[in-house]
Length: 87
Image 1: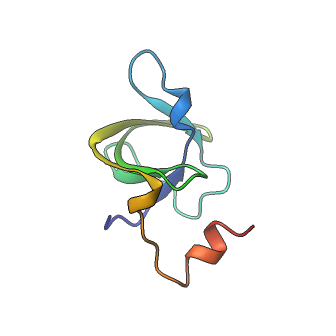
Image 2: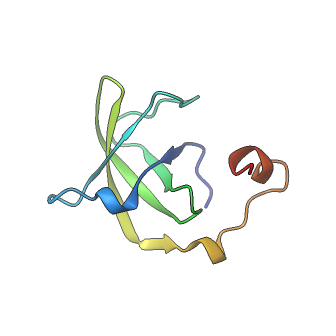
């Protein structure tokens, strides 16, 4: 997926309206409402999401489920994989 901003989420925490709320506390780039980002979890599942709003350090995103990629299909550049998922 060719998006610059990655947001760590819990895909099990989908709200009734279909959105996910995540923290921007450790983000190096803070997206704006309307931005398209990559949502990912610690298990390395990911999908594209649309940022609906930012309130303080909370970001509300709407996942685009047609872009879902389970961990077995996700490939990261070698230089990023150790930093993102160090044991």
